Length: 293
Ligand code: NA7
Image (tube, rainbow, N blue to C red):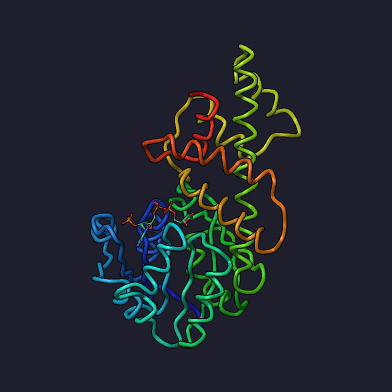
């Protein structure tokens, strides 16, 4: 069963920085879209573009042949699935449900089990690419679950993303996502720390970045985030509060597995400090503020 635009009704719950552009791309591709968001005004742009606004997550699920959720964290997802008028009660047998929020692998497996009981195909499919990737339809999906379900979902994923990796059973997508995000967090944290050293010594941070660009330490993170750190501009593309959440999820998973993540634990404290000290919603590159107070 393929999810062609002409016949499929897609439901989308969670219209934050990521969900809104993902929804917009689905509308542009011709899908019929029903949405719900806790703060209803965030649906305005999508409704103006043709989306229907439902009264509850349950209502979205009930009218969808393909459900997508994109909320901030595990409590948010549990709320929209099992809270009052939650989506779980509305899911129809035979539909496909994909969660692209970053949550714990354990919650992904709990959702998979609840879906299996209802005859619903579930995939955990968190993404990377930031809000610019969501806008351009160039996200990368990290997928856990059944390969045939993923195959059938590819037409929908291809509207929002440019690549997807099937990584194993339910929870595998989330596990790889947490591992990947801890690397991004550590890379940006390391860059900020090194810039703290260089500028503390009275040199220009640009000099360090210039040399890094020609060295083995060059990276995509350097290209995308170094300008933020040098300018001190941290407009959220991937908010620091969510990176902090992901580091916590990685550490929880590591605790359950008995795997030590000492560098991640140290970085989480740095992100924690900046999160606590910031009044605005900032990009995770604002970890630089730990050194530039
Ligand atoms: P945002 O922009 O912070 O958006 C988060 C979304 O989650 C937004 O729609 C929120 O609704 C929703 N949310 C948060 N808490 C709740 C509760 N308790 N109930 C219902 N809905 C909730 O995040 P992003 O779009 O950048 O990221 C989404 C995911 O992708 C996240 O897991 C990242 O780590 C990766 P609101 O508009 O605040 O009412």
